[in-house]
Length: 98
Image (cartoon, rainbow, N blue to C red; front, side, top):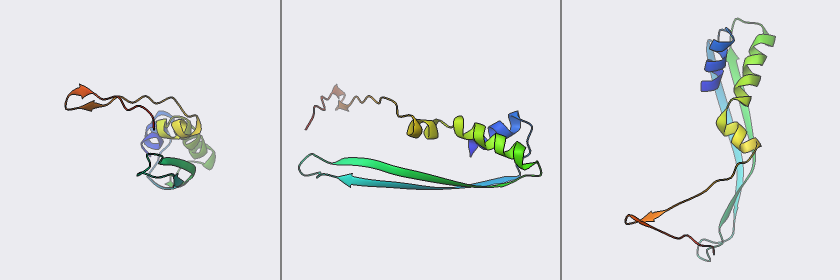
């Protein structure tokens, strides 16, 4: 929703109010005890409610830009590499693999 306000301001579109509902669907396979747990996100849905005196075309432009400018949305749509480092009591901890 931050991006809606940001891009609304940039495009000079008045956004009086915005509400967003996000539903994430996921599942977890494997076992923590067997060190094989694996979480999977299987889908996400967003629903926006916008109040604005501007035209539907102008508001739609804001929402398109906000979605394309949202770092979380883009990371879900175009996955990126993630690296992890860990310290244990201030010392590097090798995580290895199961």
